[in-house]
Length: 148
Image 1 (cartoon, one colour):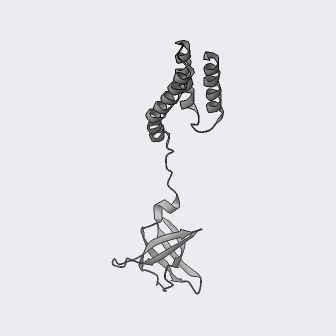
Image 2 (spheres, one colour):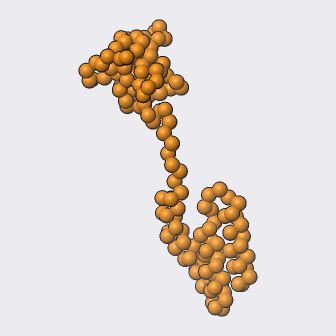
Image 3 (cartoon, helix red, strand yellow):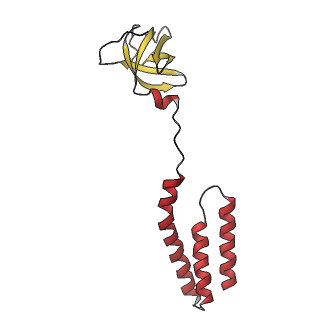
């Protein structure tokens, strides 16, 4: 039985090596535990219980660590930078005429009104969402600002 557990550990290790995520490393550890149980001449049932228990413990101990350290860093996009921000209208926003532009974060963006309201140049707006390269805005409750 010990050869079976040794082969299982190697197989689980190979599967882990060829996959992108953590798939079978816990079973490889469990198979090593069962291998030592087979070396100690324990019954097959006890070996299976040890395999399952060691695999479960390895999963419980390592999974939270892997999730914490394995998270990819979030790289901010234009969407992350502008949603919810205030912007200044640089060109009258008129959805019917398909016109409008706002200035935010050092860039001029094509803009449309969320509710279809015409928003004159110089008005302060808040960015609600982005669709493609268009920002959808609504008038801000804050005092209007001069846009340069």
